[in-house]
Image (cartoon, rainbow, N blue to C red):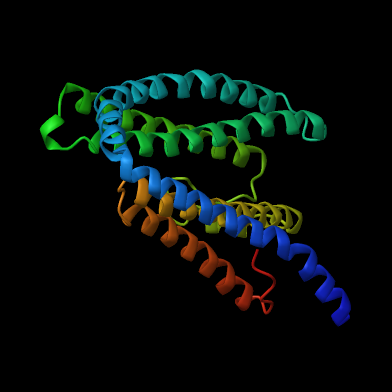
Length: 254
């Protein structure tokens, strides 16, 4: 690429970059100034205790009830389709695969939400422990069990029609074994999805880092939330770069 084209691309992107930095600085200054006059930390703290003590445990139970309601019918429908599949009609198989993928997707999201809710329930401190805390723990265990069992059922259903597939959800090396048993087309698709996820994670971490830096001023949240986000960001970037170097190409980190 010629130097003129490189400079042109840089000049085109630079104003937006500068604008974002400038806006972030102004927002940070305004919020920091406002925090001098309004004690946001206490107000947020009170709402946090209320949410963690009562709302989060109730949401956990709702989540434990909703997961099987959403996933079990999809799983049963998929296995019914696969049972009658003639091993030739790809459209029929794709319908079943779509429903099994939905089970994996929904249970994965439920797990993420459950970890947030249990953390919120614990955040109220020992002085606010109540029957609601026990409810949160029971709901969390239920969601964990439902997610693992449903995901294993979905994997078993796929393996029943794809004997070349290997791995069990109960195995700590499941993802590695499953990837190794995929064909080249599947690996290429997984690679594209993984890169998209990598980009999304980078963007999300960058946004969260800015938000949490500002919240440290306004809400006195401290540096631990930012540290947690930066650890994820660092691990994501390092994993990508390490794998890229292993394959002989550094690529472009974005």
